[in-house]
Length: 177
Image 1 (tube, rainbow, N blue to C red):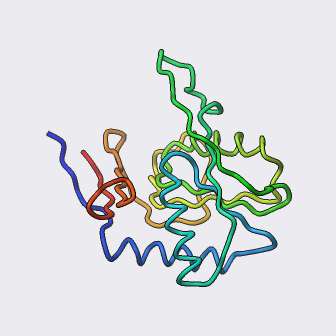
Image 2: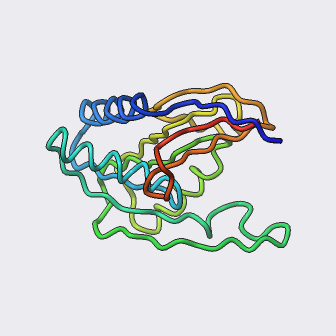
């Protein structure tokens, strides 16, 4: 039987998201855009974008980036990964891009996201924002610039992020043993 332990729930999750928005605002330079990494980073990107717009009156371009075909495990082990669609209706060339994902562990998905981003131009700067930073899981030397919460986890544990937009009753983040 799997054991679930609540890592972040309401209202602490909203407080964390608003703090991340304040950090983004403090570090806006030049033209800044938000890119949610498909599939799960888009929920976080949407929520941050809403807080920025309605709570802080900051309107940044928001897009969704799919990195499926850039993953190093795309064609391994007989698993065929299903791609998501990109939704980037602005130019990222010479702009600051904040790449957003819900959980960073090995760093491989972020690397794939950076590779996929190159298909849309060369940003002036790329920063990484994650809601949960699994600190000791990194395979690649990638560190987030903005972190909601850092956690120490074992390889056997998983972090599960549940959003109302996905059909859950409330927003929660769990560690599953």
